[in-house]
Amino acid sequence: MARATSQLVSALLILVSSALLAQNTPRIEPQFPLDDVAPEPPPYDEASDPEALGQPMLCFSEPWRCPEPEDATTKPRDVASGFPRPDAKVKMPKWKKGRQTHVVGRGAPVQPGQAPWMAQIQRPARMPSVTQRRLDWEDRQFCGGAWIAPGWILTAAHCLYDGRTSIKDARYRVRLGVNNIGFQSGGISYRITEIHEGPGYRPGVYSNDIALVRFAPDAATERGRRAWSEQIAIDGGPLSAGNLSGDQAWFFGWGRTERDRPSAPLLFGKVKIEPKCSNDRFAICAKGIGPGGATQCHGDSGGPLVIWDKGTPVLVGVVSHNTEHTLCGNQRKPGVFTRVSAFRNWIEGKTGRLPGLAFRR
Image 1 (cartoon, rainbow, N blue to C red):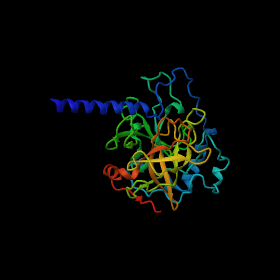
Image 2 (cartoon, rainbow, N blue to C red):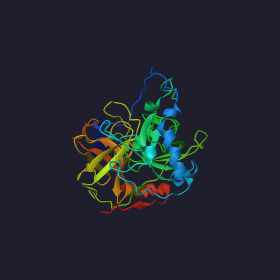
Image 3 (cartoon, rainbow, N blue to C red):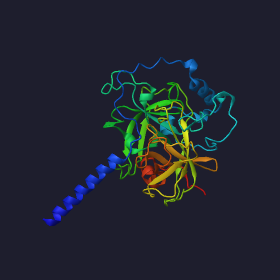
Image 4 (tube, rainbow, N blue to C red):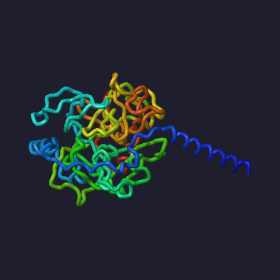
């Protein structure tokens, strides 16, 4: 009897501790409810849409970069390589000129095509259970992800549910090949067919915060459209704590900026990987570099943390959460990213064998 009582007390203590941790762990994904009195989004104007102008020109000159919508879910592809870092000064093609890089909300805009592995998890245009109005592009932005295999993106486990709403059951979309989410012509959207939490994921405390989302074309997929999309290599490096310590990395997202609104153009933040994290085996901590260093915020969840390995971008982490009570934009504390190499075997158990690189020092 005494032993049973002791076991019960221990179980209650674990539940209480988990509840306290969940209360103290800041959430960085968008929250319901949505405003029911906001105006309907303005009508689409293709003439003012830079995505509508730039993408067809690129896809005509380099068609292999712009897969058929069905091919993105079925045909193996080479991973992206030969890309400059997003903060590198490079000579841009004529069709990209006129869009100057400048600091926005402690992140800097990504030029179209500089992160072709980026994926958006998007709310549906209509959600009658939440609001009667049509959602605009800001409302529809939920999480980010990275395209890693035909029909698969890698994201954060806490991005699989919007509150209690399953992104699969509620018909959320995966969108590839988009840079500016403020324009509806950018990218190609797919239905979500499967969602898989990472092994050992604990909601609220963000342990093992990683997930796979499977997607496929459907009637709403824009089959007549082409968009620059390329898969990214995932880290195949040794599973050793701190093996990336001191390295510079870049994360990507459409999360909220200093204006407390999602960013329409894709932004990047430059960070330095810390030598220690709360769980080095499964997580990476990284802090913004410089006085304007970026930190992740609402809407950045699930986005990729990338290191450049001799010209090849390598996915090493997934945006998870901020440490302690750190607010968005405060870089005194590091952000936390789920370590991809810790879950490579689980990932390949779902997707099949993936091309990847052991990060070469």
